[in-house]
Image (cartoon, rainbow, N blue to C red):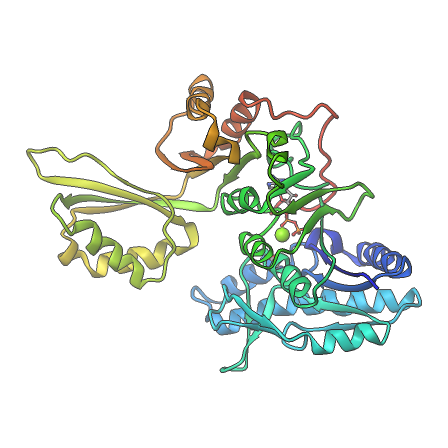
Length: 423
Ligand code: ADP
Ligand code: ASP
Ligand code: MG
């Protein structure tokens, strides 16, 4: 019997009625002759609300307790979904991440799945039941503590389950009809992609297209799991995220896959760093001790007279206090004059494998921003991506300007956003 893994995001299970709707969809899939394993997210904005609650009782939530708190969100939805399926006359069993055999690293808040031991899920399925798994969570075997996988982590749970169970497909159900050429909340005329390669999807996701978590795409590529991103609110065919097309088919692929944006980063500028060998090394060694992921780095040309320079870098906004503390602690060794932060930045990225073989893409990108009078503060590129930092308040305008400069608009009317708060 074919095995389908389905993942339902928070907006698809936002209340009791939505859970019943999803239950009907699962039962339909089961009755059509498939075995079904489901990963489910917390209802609506539950995870954000739990984070707000934690921040209301402390300024520094302990990571272990934070994970215990956050995993509660998915436990609620998994239990309710199993009950709603049983109500429709089909057997269903709910499992927490640890019960489902999801083994992770120890890093609270951003654990990585190491392995899935799917024995209990296989047993449930062979008993004829639907297995419902709480997304976004697992167990670190040494500490026996529950962990979470980082925001959007239920996507990764689903792909890991699909890989471990050798599923035929991993369906990611969300509140839009698939992966679009830009976030439909910002560009209603965005075009739905029928197919996108793991490679391009990984760059889109890593650049802020939160329709899929980057780690889930990495996982799918590694285990060759085909992902079908689609809406739980419509019956439409969505977007297939798959390996590169066979040679010869490549001609059909568009040059640009899409535009992504990210509002979650901030910028730290270290002013007056001595322009001598080893300065950058000392600075970033200090940052590394705070376990922060750096994105872009820019070093200004130094004025020969002063012999000092400024170094700016971007990082997730919620890592700023940690990084600042680490740099300040090493102030003497780095020898800088002043430290500033800026969280009013936005990043826009253009992604497409066709950039490798087409010239003029950067020129068109930058002239689109110029025509919209948008100032560029930082630039970084890879062979299939160009990213720039702008003022946050200009970001939406920048996305729309670039999207239309590359003729990415759809011919089939506006994209539908079915639900979700976009939070
Ligand atoms: P879920 O709760 O189902 O996991 P998410 O909110 O995490 O849903 O992801 C879906 C959202 O991703 C959409 O509502 C949309 O606003 C946003 N998004 C950002 N970029 C894209 C894109 N390129 N294509 C589709 N959706 C996108
Ligand atoms: N509930 C978690 C979050 O909001 C995980 C997920 O939805 O994928 O990030
Ligand atoms: Mg998500």
